[in-house]
Length: 203
Image (cartoon, rainbow, N blue to C red):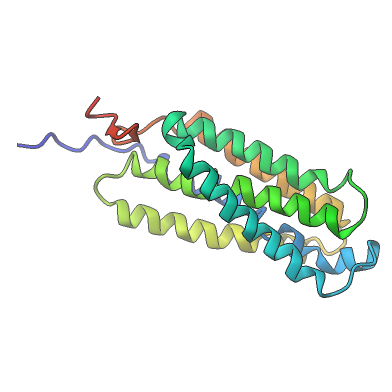
């Protein structure tokens, strides 16, 4: 007879979702301030596509990097999530200190995409460590958090139309840092976490 499933603390799924929402809010941060950048940096309307492509390219490269080096297997996924959140937030805020040219924006967006590979997929891995039963529903909940997170910059910009775009960038970086801290302090490793080819329960 298989052992009973241990109860999952009620805070686990909402906390992971909140952390994911904060981290993935960086995905389209630049798109939400595109009009401001066209005005202040004298960029053209065609730059939005380049910025978005930079994020996607960074995510692809980051996913390959994290996967090939098995980062989330060799180290605690929660630590990987925290460090990735901090670095993504730093990349997002770095645009405030760099020269006001398209290269600065695309470089920082590439960095964000790269470190998002340590946020969204790793968050899913952390969730799978808790939900052997009902995993599909839990992951669906997190996909919803992803959708809300990627839409958050536009909602934030709509609510704070009088905010300077620099403040929007800082708020989104703060949310990403907060998401990493939530995951680190409130979500311990789950009983089904797979690490190095064996689950925590098997070890």
